[in-house]
Structure formats: structure tokens, C-alpha cells
Length: 166
Image (cartoon, rainbow, N blue to C red; front, side):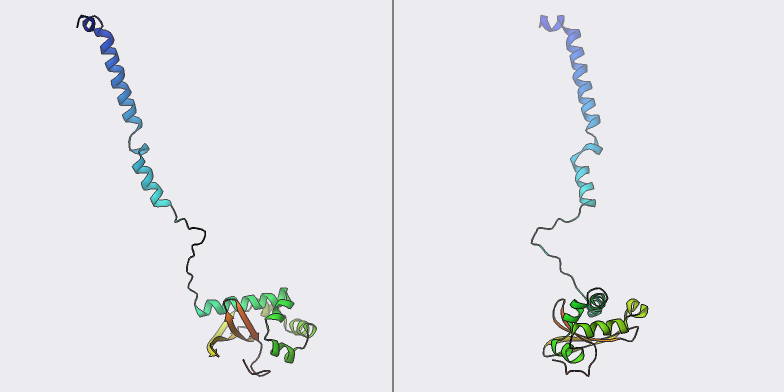
């Protein structure tokens, strides 16, 4: 006990140093550094992370599918006539054009700024042998028939009179 009384000043100084250390710790561990606040901020701004094999369902309307098919086919006619030619129904392309060269002539004769800038104008939808059929007009009054085999797999007819639709 006598030793404590002799070192009274040192004990009081140590007590105040410990008290100051706790106050400093408390000050810097306030709400802006707490884990709870960080978690709340992360939850407000975080996005769902998807696994490698997880998918998002996408719901497409018939009109959006038609626009995709029309733009895809027109783009192929302008930039890749072989792909556009291959997209035509086999019987139809043989009777209507016979060769890629005649199809290219058809494209050159019908290629205009109006054709390039044309968009979907009107359409109707039918069904032939369980396949969806889109009858499409663009605003340049070009007519297309898209027979959908599966997603992004379609056959094209440029008229309804050359061959009977399969």
C-alpha cells in the first residue's frame, strides 16, 4: 500500500493516459467508421451478382421481334448479300432469282436512301404448320414475309405469289 501512495502521481498520469486513449478510440470509431453504416451504404448501391450459368428472362413482343428480323435482313442486304440470299427460302430464291448475281442486281435496283432509312410500318401475324409467320411492310412500302423456324432462325419471302408458303 505504501508503494501505491509513493507512486500516486504516476498512477494518476497512467489513469489519464488510458482515459485519453479510450476517448480517442471512441472518437474515431464513431458512426462514420462503423461496419453497420458501411453495410447500409453497400446495400443501397450494390447490384445483384449473377453466377456464370444464371440467366435473365427476356420478354420480347412480336413487334420487337419483327423489328429485329427486318433490320437484320435489311442490314444483310446492304452489307452482306450472301447472308441475305441464304436467308431467303430455298425454293423461293431458286424460282425468283436463281443465282446470287441476279439477287445482287435486285438489291442494286431497289437500293435507295428511302430503303436504307425505312422502318417497320405495319405487320400481321399468322401461323403455318406450327411456325409463326410475320407479314411485314416497311414505310418504303416494301413487303417481306418472315417464317420463324426458331429464335433468330427465319426464312424470308419478298412476295406472296412466287411460291406457296411452306
